[in-house]
Image 1 (cartoon, rainbow, N blue to C red):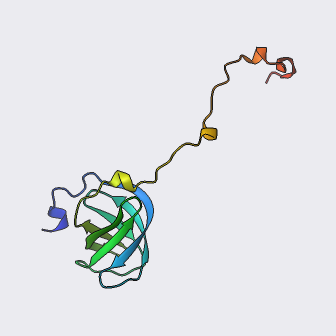
Image 2: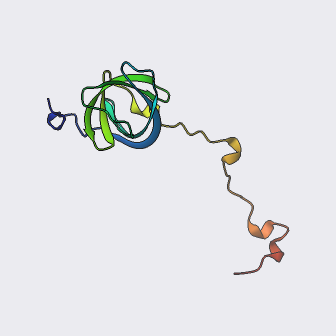
Image 3: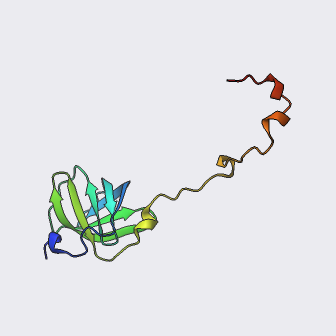
Length: 123
């Protein structure tokens, strides 16, 4: 089945920018790739690495580890990888946690009650 004939094509893709490692089957060499979008069934990557359709690969995604797949399409320096098994793309996103000191609270005291209220000039 051609990718354009696939009814799932274009659904549920998550646009993002991640750096990942890619390994071609039969080689231990790691290649750096940029992940441009990610879905449950695959991803689009950019790299200077030349690949061909049907090439078995593994890609290392943060929080998910090594994922097996196959190169589904190639266009210039971009290529698609169809995963052997579905993944949860949300888990691959960077997790941002707020530090306690990074939170802000509203000052509830009116400016007129501050000791320096008379020193403020009107703008």
